[in-house]
Image (cartoon, rainbow, N blue to C red; front, side, top):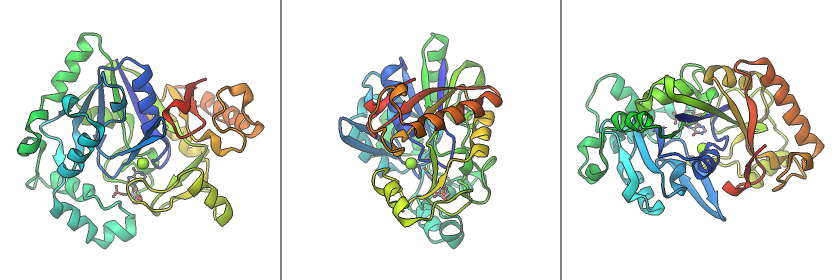
Length: 338
Ligand code: IMP
Ligand code: MG
């Protein structure tokens, strides 16, 4: 069966940590990543931190094979550096039609005021590569790169055979619903849809084998670029706590993230559109007094209230998901089931 991890806000909800936790505790043969290298997923284990732009966060489980689908975009050098850093040469698989963003595409995006100053693009060249693909211009696919030859395999066939034999797959999506090209806050969005159904299509999977859809939320929202934040926090002292304790600095862009209060409307849409069956909450330790607390009964009154409010909200939105996972610290081991 397939489990999917999606972002319920504007990216950076902690999908990396949740995917790493799931791959560690679940029994997945494959972890699949789709989307572009504009999305950095951070995984911390025993104090060692990895920022991944390409490799699925499930790499921490050595038994899991790692897959980039046809809807993945990367840059050859960035990918190879990450493969080396994570020691994953032996278990990486790339779809022949995953796209390699060229330096020309990166330069074109970085030179375009429309992308950079208006939309606040991360500047990896993803938007330009997607544009070129849609226009059916010449694209550099993974199958065209000799350095990646050993990793190329027919991904849809491989994954569907795994399902046929009763195996499990973890599908790690990128960004969050507020950044979706279809359902987000246009034009302050990324160049693709960022919801569960699209992640499946990008990997070459269909909807019938989905078991759980995890949607990840923080108790607040961050945005690295321009665009709506309903209740933006502007108090500098308060913001500093998010930027220091909360590490709210862009993992790829290095920009200080803007911060806003939790948005119920965005959360309800994220549950609905992703068909969320399980909610994961990260950064619960940003409520004072919850650092590394591991039992719900020991949470502070503020954290308990947040969970109660979210439970009340999700009870009203189909398919009425339960809060399944929370984290009270940056390490993968600070994540647990409630
Ligand atoms: P682009 O996808 O690089 O063009 O960026 C479009 C918008 O989405 C900008 O506001 C970016 O800051 C934002 N964005 C893109 N990827 C991420 C991400 O992984 N996390 C948070 N924001 C992102
Ligand atoms: Mg990120």
